[in-house]
Image 1 (tube, rainbow, N blue to C red):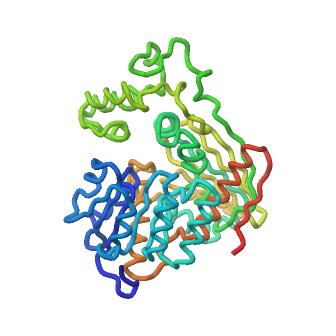
Image 2: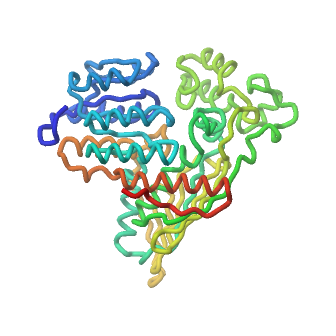
Length: 428
């Protein structure tokens, strides 16, 4: 590995975890191999390794991350992307920090406050370049919101109201049938899906969260809500045509219309044919009735936020919506901002005038569309920080990351026990 002032171009990367998130970051790298290149991948699935190495000249493959880290010097690595499942972040992140390599860790950093604190402590002790997958910090839309708030155009922000409309089919896909459906197997919904949002609210307002109170539960996706006559699987269900959460509607019918298996059906099967998709729906987890899964995460949640300056905000996450952009309202002392992820409307109290400002679209807001430029923005900034030795390109460092994660853990504790919780960073 090389020191910042001796950094090679292109930056040499390895990825641990070759799933959707690892693939998302490598899409940018494939198109910018003058700036960065993939030299190693670790994942137990050969199909995932084969896909992620596509487009690179020589990639060393490992079934486990440990021999990859052991070979870091021989591979002349500069940095590692850890994009494993949520519960598998800690050990590879600690190993990367101990090796002195730069680290980009997918969010959430860990699934408990203790895990997050352990990783942050290791990163700070090693003094390595460190970024977390808070991709919403890196979008053009975020830059616009921060610029307007920072200009003082709406005065001091006193309240903020933020909505994450997860979408009925996306909730069914990822949080009822999918990898993030069960807290014990992954993490609470607020951490898995909405840690982005809690982090983003602090980033755009420039405020830190002091305390939280939260309410929410799993109201609908449970067996007691199953329609009469429904079956264990959508392919066998008599009432499926009238069900908005039908696996046939979400995966099979889009494949039949387009003639190819595409996201999110690519999560359901490694195959490329309609027959292989049907087989996966007949036997795998994504073909199950949403009312008869082993899910336990919430399908709606509200968090009340108090910032350290005494101002306040609210955050709402709901599965029962269109799959749409997040929406935010900022209420300031001189004006307000309404934002929908593509544009903002600024209202000036003194003049009564409204100004609409749009941003250039860079893909859709969700994971399939690169988070509206956030995925590319993060990996580009991370590579730039390594190439120049200037860590200020990274917008999601250890302290900010720990505070946003601790805010999420506090909110989940509040949801469970009904008490307001303080957000306190550990003493250093």
